Length: 313
Image: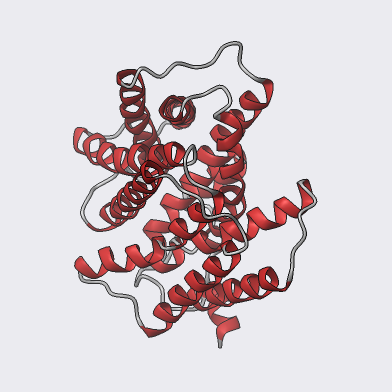
């Protein structure tokens, strides 16, 4: 039965899930490296302004209509909450908080998704609750082997980032009217990037010159893979699957980080990590095979994100 349910997921949904899982599992390292030359808010501002400008220009060349004034407004609200509040504050927090603490905070995102969704009248069902709680337990177990150092400013920034990210995500589903398809993603990145730029300038941030080569390569990765591919894929998931499944990246990303650590840094994986990753895999299977949002996702070819995610990854 579960296998049949998984087969019902359109290929575009599976592609978007894989994109978010794999890319966002590596972007924390890219952010850490980028901070060598870029201060937090200017890092995120330049990243999303370039990505949003490229996506907007590509769509206009293909004849896509520009967003209406209301769509710009609603895209701006989502962009400020997700990009400035969510990602901007996360970049700030990474200066003060250990990776273990960050992983546990991020893993609580599906729980907040469930709360916000319930306030808008859509609580998770029993199977989804099991998947959410199992995923959080697995992520906490996986992170327990690391250091949990944190300064109060970092904890506050992480908490603010989590609230902004989850609330903005649910608002984009329930209350706001975004431009269709990838144009909605472009408007969010452009408005969010402008807001981030203003915050960075007000805070007196400045890019460290000359630019470090590693920081520039990491920044380019964030633009192409982290923004054009993964952020667009995430917004597509929000529109087509349950909040619990869309937010399951929070459990998978620490697993990707552990795998990358073993591959790039020679870190060893013990019994605790193996058990935690098995629990996380089980939670994702539960969420993947649970009910849909009640409306089918577009077939391959009908969703602009399918081409966007592949083309820019």
